[in-house]
Length: 298
Ligand SMILES: O=C(O)CCC(=O)C(=O)O
Ligand SMILES: [Fe+2]
Image 1: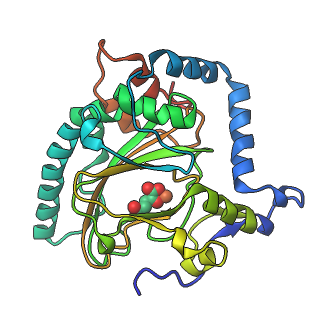
Image 2: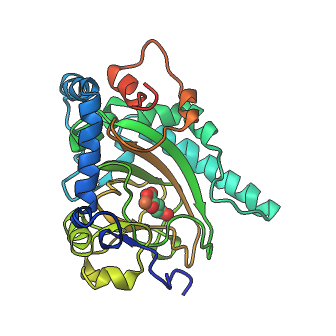
């Protein structure tokens, strides 16, 4: 049992802070923090809501429902097919090179190379993708990162193999695109939909870190776990701040996945410097420009 977490490392509200503060759950804490950020600089908040209405795509798009997860027809979204064709080939080749050298690293393509890649930028910052995520978050999102992970069979450090919530914002979206076939044993992203995840958060006072499966299943029936298996080229959007999740339990097979991350403008992730390498130009659409702005690096 490689992917068994022996001891709970999770943090709970009851363990610290002033007595009243101890009763404030994670989602409320994040909301308060965000409200403070918006009050300090309200203008971008209003601008971005307006921009979404004004520049958002008017033709039908996939929707990310309240439950926080949606499969995406990646090939039908603008730039999706090109991205998948190009990066399935590159990822497979880089993985083979690493294997030949006998080394392992989860990151097989440097983040700088991903940030600078035109096919990734064309998809990740397209009006389609930004509008779809924007409708879910209620604002033009900020683009945080593109990464490409190799999960090697039996590798414990290939990703985040234990249940947790991310806490960079009150909501966020990660787009996963599998670049290899990901069956049950290849570490598919697995999650609990928003409603049941929220129940866990409120019942336990969860604040952070990894939780053993048994701990989660004391509060949520394991039948609610959704295991997102898929073929190479398939993709989905997931809100990892609202859905308990884990991935990379590569018990039988390897996994190659590209992960694109977005949150609102008011998030607490430090923007990576390599985002400056994203190809830009005078023809860029307003939504792309806004998606490349960050609170800590306007
Ligand atoms: O290893 C994985 O796929 C899970 C990664 C994760 O926790 C995340 O994308 O937030
Ligand atoms: Fe996560």
